[in-house]
Image: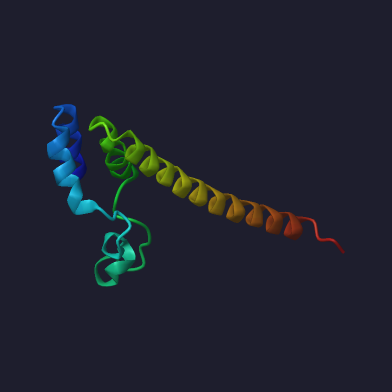
Length: 108
């Protein structure tokens, strides 16, 4: 719901108001924005409640206000996080691939 509100504010070119609304979400990595923080509600579900599109919108919002350096810093931080996630998936994928090859073709 917050993403829709902020996206509409940006579409209406109300950048200053969108920035004020975003100030509540300074830390999109706060513990209470992860499913693990509420085990009684979400059981064993893992991950962030904040969608990527919302993170991207918050990261690029300073650009519209002329704060290009801040926008680049936030976008670079988001890119770094994406690289970390992709790398962890690749490591898991190659481990599973190696394990399956060893099980199908034992060395002995």
